[in-house]
Image (cartoon, rainbow, N blue to C red):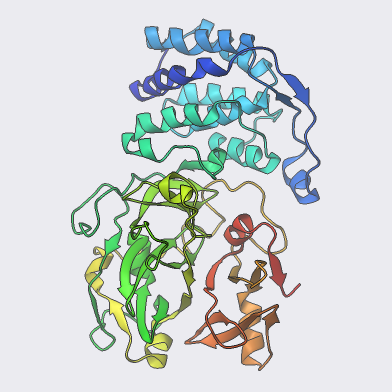
Length: 461
């Protein structure tokens, strides 16, 4: 009996065919994979050989049968299964990236399993237990399997079929589109300062209302806050609010700020979004609904330029063309009681910004590890170890293991790496230089910092 496809699955197949034909020509040549680190080999095994060049004519013919005929018939029968087997038999693991993108959205269980089996064959994996999409993506990332020619155009079509508003997001740039996936939410594309309007997204807050510390009776002393100081003004951003907003555009101490919080990587950051080069207007940061190795992908709603959230660098769009690099302000992760005692003059975001929710993702949802694929992780620390990250004057990223740094500083030890010096600050830690100037440090999970700073030094070594 033929297997009926869901209408959603059919849409994805129609979309992907629209952009496939331009990169099938001759049979590719096999290329042996580059040596991988020992920890990758131990966890993921040896990668398959990867062909070079365009996809083969045989793969083109198989896709024609598997997808075009199934589109016309709105069914998946023996011919389509045979064609998918032909793709799997091609021994071209690059096509597993496309399968993984489909797997992220296809809801029909039988079709999903067929796609998974094809990907397992392409990657020479015995069918493992677990979510097929996560398994496939983790192996592709860890092995650094290249994407097939024309991959961005194919991926763009798949994703914009789901969310048309991503049309301006999926463009060429300094971003590895293989690693970008859907985070399960829609894009926040509301214009600036309209964030009181509801949206089917993670709603950013622009120019949020604040109160004095005395008025913030809704906060408990043990509640986690992200503290920021600019030009002698102090403000606390409660984690309870940031977990449901994930992005704030604010003004503090006469400076404009964009403040992303990635719940998945335990990192609140603050970027100055003023005093920019001539001809660049203030970027208004929003959540795209996309992730890259379990880190949020943020963008400027005015230009649709995508930023590397961890680095503050524009990687696509007009702002990338202008090489915009945002400067970072220090964020101190601490508890409310300690922060307000150290800075009684502080302001704090008002309770209504939490939208009536009181979540605590930090030790709940992610307790067993990242819930989205991240591939391989630097094994020097556990994935969810808290670190304080900073970048030295020489450009060297450095991570300080927070627990050991706090213990050392309380013991009176000096913690220094090149020009970076750590100081206790209102129950948290900040990095300063020899003159005491802030160096834009912040706290994060180790897996996230080490992925976006792969050459990072680690203290203690």
